[in-house]
Length: 495
Image (cartoon, rainbow, N blue to C red; front, side, top):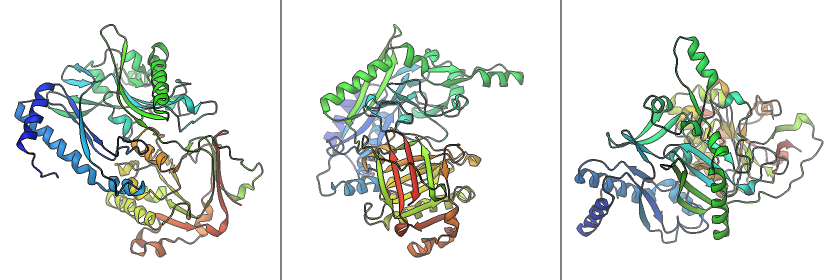
């Protein structure tokens, strides 16, 4: 597909369309028959590409044709094929169309990007604090192009907004605001005719944002520290607090999500951008809307009141997604955080492939419920941030856990709203972030040291990684996994 040629009549149509857009930046998006039907989200399975769309007509045409080929080729990637097979769609007709949109945004010197962009869910699958209403919906909000809202980006955190409580943040301490915020901005560079990521320092230095006071707040502590070194630099944290409290934005987004949910008769997942007009009022563009999968989030599960603490494997409040669950666990896969971080880069990729092999040994998830625990972020593209698995390498897992390991800055990202998390929700995989250092968290791994590692039986060819990857059979040990979405409590213990 990547080497294919288009018939002359198709090339002529392409050229006419590009003449219509002129040199406006465009985005070429996938729009397949199965992807845009009800019941299957296909989140992130097929590609979409931004085109800065600058240069001569020939240059612009060549770039456009290249991205069209790439999008058609993405129908054959492993994740897409596996997804279709899992959803019983592998024998159905799948045809790819393309949607070409003018990019929503504004010209700022040599750059082009919207004030803000994001993902909206009419049902909040991840309520991280008591009192937040899942039915009120949530947003995943970024400054600039929306790529950072749908993908997990290294050392970068979009603003998560519960629409019924927009100022409540998922992190606990105010001093964490700077760390768990957005540090890069995705833009289109019109001079260089390419997609580019800028740091917030570059945005401030070039004075690219007129409404910075609505989007961010000054980091007074950081500015004081810099001042002590003899420099005088402004430092901003992207919080969107003023936007959420002093404009109509939250109210409009809430109404939009509720209205769409009402028409679809189903929870929805949207992508949007927003820009300020000449009068300083916010204007929102709805880019995409599709059904969003939610399952069992209101089921009440009773957690036993008295449990011997010595038999608890894991206990915590909040930081999980997956509703009310009561499951007997058969297998545990544990990636040792300390040993994983010491591995060279190539071995970290090998660990991801090894997890995929173990995943394939689970024939049916409901017959062998498995917990997968590992450091940092699952599914990252950056091994320094976690284990770089693809979704098809963890699709048979029942419960997935991301363990915070502060020594190496391997921190989970509560990135609900991304394509990765939509996969988890749709496949009914329970997710949790574990912060072992938190006072209300019990995470007891001592019993693992005296238990047999099944790796030598399941994947003997990868035995050299037995000190990093451990697989335990707990089928006969009555390991219960219980979560109650109402009280936001979760426990895993040996009965």
